[in-house]
Image (cartoon, rainbow, N blue to C red; front, side, top):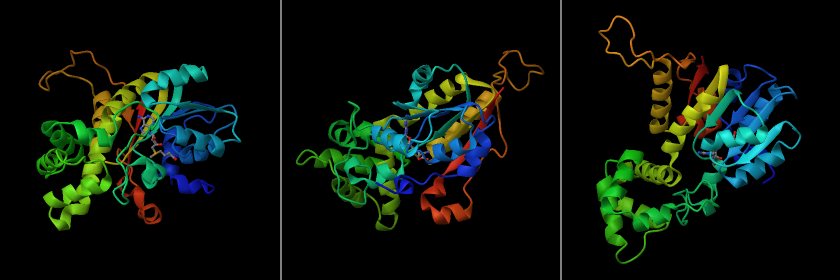
Length: 311
Ligand SMILES: C[S@@+](CC[C@H](N)C(=O)[O-])C[C@H]1O[C@@H](n2cnc3c(N)ncnc32)[C@H](O)[C@@H]1O
């Protein structure tokens, strides 16, 4: 790939830079480096004294970003999940951070490469591991081994799909005679459960559910938010961009809870639990891409950004 912007078009770039950079000489951790699109723009606005730690669980992303950011000597690359941020900080020899960026989900490159098995647009074996070198289950493994209840639960909870039970039941029945392992196998089953006029949305929901389960995305997110907050210095910023309602809900709840951790019953006149706020939410609480950005990059349409500042 030669054109850097073909790998992934970063979203809300100006908004991210404005929210994240509190000190041009600071230390920043990008937990989702991807193609380095945000990183490239942030680095332009930082001084040479700043340090940028770029993490990604996808080794291809790390290699791509490494080449793209070759001109910068103040970038430390780390291949691994963002819940390993302490290890990445050890590698960079830093104890505190001025900002953490999490631009969740998958990159355009990951979804567009049929070999990675994320897409329902081409026939492909369903893999969906963001890190193809990880010894973890693939989406095909899930379809082959999960029982009816577990499959139905994944589709219902992570896909918020109404026809979850029907889809799960047909998968279990079908695989008695022939394994269900490709995108086309799965699509044929969804087609049998969902009315034609809603079916495209159901493809997206079911594929999303499998991706979340394969990569343990919500567990990763919840753990990383706590870890990141623990590592930010006072005044440091946590910037999170999410792409579906489950992620956004987790981010929103985390920020609210950290801003208002008091667990006392509302009728008590003064707080007695002693829990004090760890961060404040930065206004506006929800930042969305402008129409112009969505027109230029349709994948930006589901992006939601939220920002917290460590107290
Ligand atoms: C939306 S893309 C980020 C794009 C990037 N901001 C850019 O401008 O090119 C999300 C990236 O995060 C990575 N990722 C998702 N979850 C991760 C996790 N738990 N730990 C580390 N990387 C993760 C994916 O592999 C993917 O490369």
